[in-house]
Structures are given as structure tokens and as C-alpha cells.
Image (cartoon, rainbow, N blue to C red):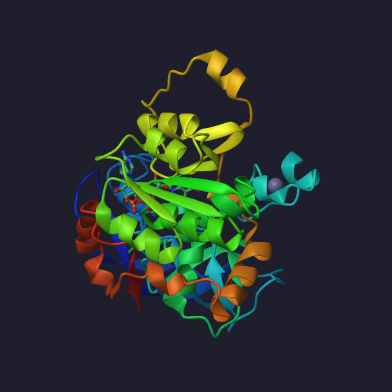
Length: 361
Ligand SMILES: NC(=O)c1ccc[n+]([C@@H]2O[C@H](COP(=O)([O-])OP(=O)(O)OC[C@H]3O[C@@H](n4cnc5c(N)ncnc54)[C@H](O)[C@@H]3O)[C@@H](O)[C@H]2O)c1
Ligand SMILES: [Zn+2]
Ligand SMILES: [Zn+2]
């Protein structure tokens, strides 16, 4: 039987979000209903509300979540009721040309639940990133559920579902940071600070954190940054070069999503180094670089989708590291809040007061 639960809805561009009753259908073939235990407030939720992603209002927000599988539909074998899972927004298809070439982390045809959740009057909802987890229960494709050790705290585990995974993966998977590398991270919010942690896990010798907010830099230092640069006070390209013997970093991770910070990343890396763009730009943004510099500086310019993660490979492994005390996910949970406090959390995020506010149920 379809169920009625409470969810956070964005009705129209720029309008404050509000709690409404939504209808969650029983899971159909290949689907699962998950009882959400925790869901982080990510910048992308605010982008949805501001109409920056698309115009498919009303949105059911929330996508950085962990919970317990309540029911599964026909043919679902990967998870069962009672499993503790992290939700992911890139359920791989196994059939597309990327999957067939053995590179499922790039899957070009990821999928979500086929059925729609609705408002009480039957209006279909667009769930954020195909998840919609600012709700007591949500309907997803079973492939969006990744089973992990249930001893992990849901608030911390859920963060792997988006921003923290994106940052960790930008360093470890996309940037290929290795032992002894020098790494710079530009923009140290939830994503950038996770890249700092990823660089440390991967054995980087020098980790330079760059931000315009000293509070973020202080957090970065606590998480493993060896040096910090406030780019309001100093030219970050010069500062990064100075800190790396005059050469630039082996890997520079851009976690803001703006042309000027991308350009800083481009020039702050050593010859043959790697730039990773994990920040998400908006459609009007452009960059203008001398093509000769693109050639002459060599190396790799890469983008990182979801940290190029493979949830089935990376989530259980990272939860194991968390349980062993080697990955401090709790450090990213600035505060836990109730479902009706998401609008306030957007304000705090906008003012840079938090790494993550996490709704707990
Ligand atoms: N690639 C992915 O799969 C993926 C996943 C999640 C989020 N993201 C993107 O990552 C980016 C960061 O997300 P977040 O949640 O960490 O956001 P956030 O708002 O928490 O952090 C952004 C940080 O950048 C800093 N900043 C802003 N302008 C700057 C500048 N000019 N120079 C240096 N620092 C600057 C801010 O002070 C803040 O600390 C966003 O663009 C988000 O959409 C990407
Ligand atoms: Zn695929
Ligand atoms: Zn997100």
C-alpha cells in the first residue's frame, strides 16, 4: 500500500521550502523504499530551489542520505528489507558503452526509480538527483542503495552519498594522488575539505588548502592540510608555487566551480601536473586560456563526476576506514537538525557557517 509521509518540497524558484505530505508508492520491479535516517544539506539542494538545475518544480529535496531498506520490489537481489544503506545518485546500468568497457564509474546511463512520488493531490514530484531524501521514506532504484556496516552513524555515513564522496574521490580516484605528492585544494567547503582528507589518506606529503574564509582554512588544518592560503589576502598561484619549491603542486583540485578559481588551479600546478574540476559551474561561465599554455604545461585537465566513485566498491571500504578511526566523517557534521529546519540550514550554508547540517529522523 502506498504510504503518506512528510517531505521537504521546493514549489517554485527562490520560494522558501516547506514540509508537505507526500505519497510514496510501493516499490515496483527493481525498486526499493528506504526509511531515511539521516540526510545532509548539500549546496545542490539549494541550486535546485533556486532553479539553477532545471525547471521541473515541484522538487522533493535531499540526496545525501543513509537509511534502512523497508521493502523491495520484484527481482531485487542486491538489497533486502532491514539492510543499512547509503543512497547514491549514480546507479550504474551495466549495459552502456562505459560499463561494457569495464569503466562503470563513468556509466553514461545511470538510473532512478521508474514510479513517481507525488503530492497529496497527485502532482508528480521531481526528487533531487533521483533521490529525494528530506522525507521520512523515499522510493529509489535498488541500485541506488549500497549496503554498508550498520554500526556506522547514519549522519556520518549519509555524507558519503554526495559531497564527501565527491571530494575524497576527486583526490583519490580522479586526481590519482599518490604517496609523496604535493596537492592544493581551492575551495574548502564540505567537498574541498573532503579532498584534503582524501589527499592525506592517499599519502600526499604536502596539502595546501586555499579559501577566502579563515574558518574553512582552520578546519582544513585540523583535517590534514599542511599549509593554508587565504586567497583574499594573497595571490594563491604565487603562494602555492612558493610552498612547492617554486614549481606548483602535482595535483590541484578546484572545489568552487568558478572560472577564476579554475584558472588559479591551472597555473598553480607543476609541469605535467593534474587539475581536477569537482566544483560545478553554471551555464554562462567561460574560461579563456592561451592554448599554448594548455600544450606547454602538459599533464591532465580532468573533471570529477561524484568523485569518479563506484558506490559498491567505495562506500563499504570508506565506512570500514571510518570505523577503524582512519577517516573522520564525523568532522563534517557541523550540526544535526530536524526536517523542518532545512530552510534555516540553507541560510547558514550560504553564510559559510557550516560544513554540513544533517537532518536526522
Ligand atoms: N562533482 C561532483 O560530483 C560534486 C558533488 C557535490 C558537490 N559539487 C560541487 O562542489 C562545489 C563545492 O560544494 P560544497 O558543498 O563544498 O560548497 P560550500 O559552499 O560548502 O563550499 C564552497 C567553498 O568555496 C569557498 N570559496 C568561494 N569562493 C572562493 C574563491 N573565489 N576562492 C577560494 N574559495 C572560495 C567558500 O568559502 C567555501 O568554503 C559546488 O560547486 C558543488 O556544486 C560537485
Ligand atoms: Zn552504464
Ligand atoms: Zn550533493
